[in-house]
Length: 282
Ligand code: SIN
Image (cartoon, rainbow, N blue to C red; front, side):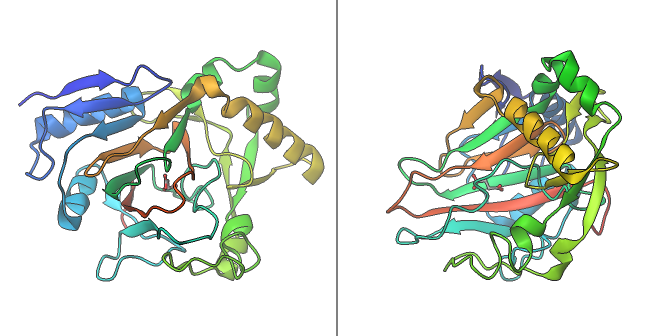
């Protein structure tokens, strides 16, 4: 059965129709989904009443499942976490900051999958900023400043003991193991080339997790990183995704940034998440 691709008409994202993810997919379907994904960066499947086995199976069609370095997984599911917030919870919204997942690692997962389980009637949208588009439209003087530059990435602002998800993060539904491992850093170029589409994009963003620029004084480097972030997440590059129960979304961390949002106080929200890496054991 051939799939139908319906673009959101916004900065990125497309709905994929004509596929039942609760059943095994064949290689033609996987190829067609991958093609649409490379083109639209974020792909959305509606009305897919999957269980956690289905979620792992579907994620696994596209690469190796990765283990979250800091968020404690769902019991019995090494590769899956729950993004969860109870109706009466007052802790800050998890992941309410622009980022690409785990860029503080040497081999970050290239993709993330999220599946809607308990969706509030309002709020809780996920924002995606198209980093291919942001680079294509970037003014020459900013691009000149970034070309050939290497960014320093670290999880310290989030997941170290003093970070925003460290000792002071009081959530009663998400368990996070803040640790000194978050103080380590890795480097990646600011501008990367997608291995399949060949398109260039901006990789990562300030704070989560870019904390400096190689061979630049700290202040000068962070001024550049903040200037870049102001460019990267302008509204014209952003698609606001609204969730439904049983909705499955996959995004490419090499070509979009993402960010959670609040606005659902008094309502429960739960989504299950997997990440996909090129290499096994990441
Ligand atoms: C995430 O960054 O994976 C969470 C996104 C969300 O909760 O909307």
